[in-house]
Image (cartoon, rainbow, N blue to C red; front, side, top):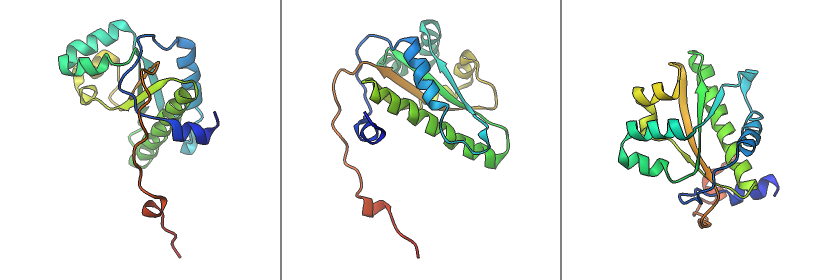
Length: 169
């Protein structure tokens, strides 16, 4: 699948098969993420593949409603941005990390995997951050859900190009 096809084929999945994504595939996806555009090559992205122990702890801390959502996918990868404290650089680094997450999603699509970019609010709460080992300068960007697809979500309606593009003189 070429890049254009992956971009157009990518969907948000909320139902997954039970087979976890193997560690080597997760490594390959993160390797793709490392090539995201990044001003001054600060490489702010950090990824954590969440194993069964930390998932159980997060579910306990987050409560049953959130735990049900966390259990949807067999593989969860947390993406954070390590920030410097410089407002301008931090803004760029957040955007660069978002690009890195998108690279993971596109790589997953290319491999026939289902994916979902979430930002659960419980991941901003101190007990959850502490359980994950997040430093004070790390910002949660995405909790990436990965796994085998159970179905193929239909494409969503998008604005027309003319609605989002203008040419300035």
